[in-house]
Image 1 (cartoon, rainbow, N blue to C red):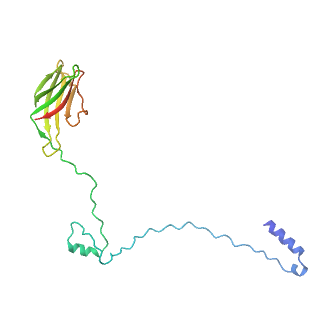
Image 2: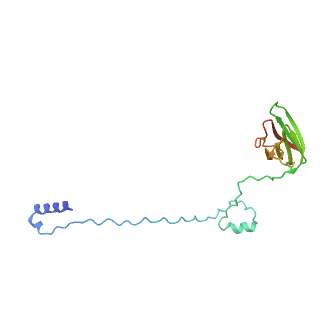
Image 3: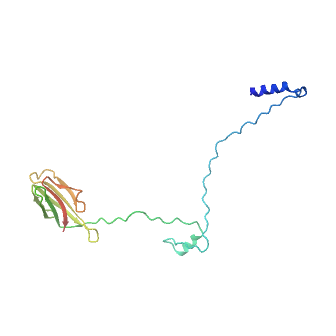
Length: 191
């Protein structure tokens, strides 16, 4: 602002006398516009529903009658029914059996034998006592499988807690390792 006043005074002194009689006018630029907050965007509007062109073949909606379809043909299109994206769950059915067949591996000499033990029965294998409480199989229309509920404990300590008590399944032999340092058991079948 000082620079403008000094420049105006220099112009006045250098001007002829006739120009000095007039009062100088200083042009002041207008102030900048006041900036307000930005305008909030409006909510998007749904597109207008257009009716299909004549002659367009539309698939019928399952579960509706032709009268329902003609009534809804002129209205907004309905959302298609959603089908869940999951595989069907097979039934979990087991059939009880009377006898368990167990494979025994003797870890000392590498020999294998099979034991046939009725449900509710016991058998001695080496220094272990094997008791069978349940034996079940899959129905004939499902994938073949067998499972045995058994307990294994040392013969010398019949009142002690068992080394193993639970289910053994033929399709997952590595899920339960049953036995001790001398013997290992696995499910062969239930009959």
